[in-house]
Structure formats: structure tokens, C-alpha cells
Amino acid sequence: MGKVAILFAGQGSQYIGMGKDFYDKFSYLKDMYDKASEILGYNLKNICFTDNNNINKTLYTQSSVLVTSLAIYKVLVNETNIRPDVYSGFSLGEYSALHSANIFTFDDIVYLVSKRAKYMEECSIKNPGKMAAIIGLGKDILGSICQDVSMKKGIVTIANYNSPKQLVIGGITEAVEKVVEEAKNKGAKRVVNLNVSGGFHTELMSEAAEKMYEEVKQISYNKPSISMVMNATGNYLDINKLPILMKKQIKSSVYFTDSVMRMIDDGVENFIEIGPGKVLSGLVKKIDRSKRVISINNTNDLERVKTWI
Image 1 (cartoon, rainbow, N blue to C red):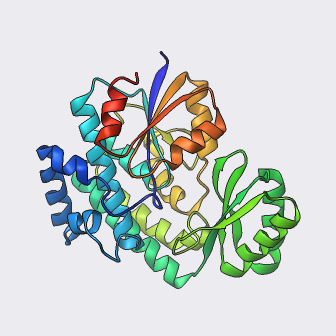
Image 2 (image 1 turned 90 degrees about the vertical axis):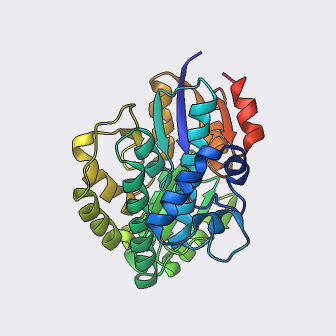
């Protein structure tokens, strides 16, 4: 059958109503949302389940996606016999993996994500920037364009290696816009400006990264109960380097393609995406179409996954 990997969704996949059918059907999730709301200082259910203007604000988005993902995963564990061989997550999703691997407690991971969101939001205001997806251009060509533009315009780099032909750049607005222009000239098939509040996973986030490093050092953590692959390296977590890796993952690129290939090389044949949206499922298929992929967004998906493996 091959090994099973759990992939946790990241920021950008959120939508109003995410996780509500799980909350309504499985009463044991109530304590999770209540505890998170107590730690965060606001009613998380209102952000996730009702019409509001906050769900797309970094300060609220990150905690909302985290708890939604962990709630869905708790149901998966409780209601099926599926047990993963490895965890990973995309950017913010890595925090869901860190809790699921029993490295951090629920209380601590909610606290850490609330701080991460705060510090990244502050950096976005202090160091304005943007991000754009570049489709159909290889990493070598795009990397060369970013390097040339950054010398003239300022910080811009490949922030996310989503798949071999889907890359995301981030940096200061003027530099990103210039790279977009050059990428089109070099043959990019499509460019999509992302609806995010800053240049995430670039040096624009250095101050947030330093602050998170200090936060992580103050909190006790455990060795992982199940191995996990980290964004910043595309390789397995070395628990002795956890604070440094969590610092790095905020300001350095997300090596999602390398992460997926690392798991595939080690025998993973089945990928289960947990959390709102289906972005990661699509990316895995672009990386290797032969692998089995399923996403769990709602309770109907849960029924499908029971017979999937």
C-alpha cells in the first residue's frame, strides 16, 4: 500500500464556514475551540463560522486555519484507522504538524501561532511587500531574474517552490512587479498576484523570525512521536535544531517540492491533505501524478477517506 503522509494546509486556504460541519457533528471538538478562544482572547467560532471581515486578516487567519486543521485531524484519528508515517505542512501548516507529532501541546501551539501572526503582521506594516505566483517558468530562470532585479530594486526572491512549474515570488512591491514583467518576457504562462498582506518567506520577515526564535526558546517541547519534514530544508526535522528551523521558516523559502520528493523517495504513496481548501492536493499531483492524493474539507470527505486506504 505504501506509506501515508499527512499534509496540513497553510494560510490562503481559509474560507467562512470552514470546519463547521465537523464542529456540529462531533461534540468533542467543542472543548478545542473553547480552549483556543480562551488563549486567543476572542471567539474563534465567530471568525471561522460566521460572516466577518477578519478571517482574511493575518492576525486572525493563522489561528483559524490552525484550529480548523487540528479539529479535522482529530476527527480523522478518532473516526478512522488511518495512522500516518510522516507529517508535513505548508508554511503555517507546519505548526499543525508540530502539534500532531506531539512536539508542542495544543495550548502552546495556539499561543505560538498567535504570536507568529502578530509578528508577521507587524513586519508587513513596517516592511510593505507583496507576492505573486509565476506559472510555467523554471526555478533557474526565475531565480536569475530575481537576483538581477534585487540588485537594482531591492528584496525579491522565490518564496515558495510549490511545484516544478509553479513558483511564488515575494519581496518589496516595486521589485516583485519588475520580476513579474521580466518573467512574462521570458515566457511565463501565467502570473497571479496573491491576496496576502506582505512579502512572506523573505528577508522582509526577519524581525518576525527573530521574535519567534525567542518565543520558541521559552517553551518546552518533545521529540516527535512521528517524523516530520520541514519547509525550510525539505528534509526531516532535527529536533535539536527546532528553534533555529522555526526561525528560518518564517523568512526563508518554502521548499514544498523538495519536501514532497523527500517523502516519496522514502516510500510515501498516499497523501492526505488536512484543512480548508485543496491547494496542496493539486500541487502533489503536479509533482508526481502517480501518487494517491485526497483532501479532507468536510464530513463527506471523511466518509470517502474511510474507504480510500
